[in-house]
Length: 310
Image (tube, rainbow, N blue to C red; front, side, top):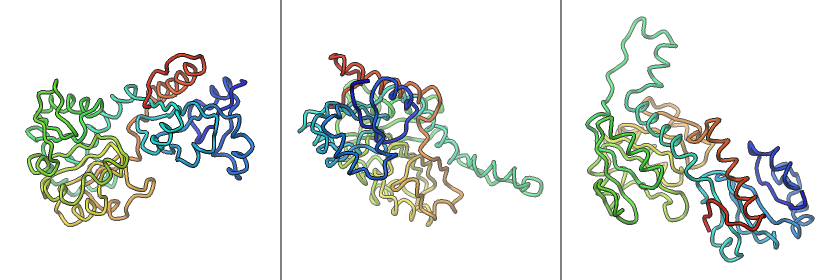
């Protein structure tokens, strides 16, 4: 209880954090500047999320900060350069959410190609009594290009292969232990695949990586699935291609300005949309929370943290 930490957002582990530490809830504070001025000299740890992060101003406002323990695998909203400069440890929660995110990727892929949301609405609205749902596309035999073949990308690829999907991948470098065809040119891969599965990290290095040129190369029979970050896609270009038939469909769990979703997407019948729920199961969120706690406990016990980013 003697260790004081700053918490930037509500999490499932609120009670456990309050049991083990003196917690200052930044998100519940009306005057954040006043709170920080009061507690800054005493804060040794920060708990945040992959959605909220921690910018340079916040990190630099905490002179005794030792560790940022983040809830989520993505850490792009955390100023990693600043953390390095300040010698602040940053941890995230990889691995424990890989299977759930990969499952959602497969669900979105099937939902958009087989029009599952549209079929559900078709039945609920009573239209089946007097009409037939139009034919849909087949998944088997398609070629899927994975953008970012990390833990999650590989898990998706392994799930897709038994469906009869051929796998290819794009990334900064070829992986020595992977037999799937590698592309160093994303436009070239998009031209050669039917489905573009986006599973890379967010951040400056991948911002709008899937741009208008990539979308055009994918073409009118191509599909996009994004379970990474909305920032990876040039969203206006994707929406325009979907609206004008230059892209066959999209399965999206993330958006550029979530929870705001482009109005045009809501009117389309060739998309499947989800509210950033890739890791949102009881078991996985509990495991993620425990990893946040374990990283903090290890650090303050003088032991190596479990999942260090920097």
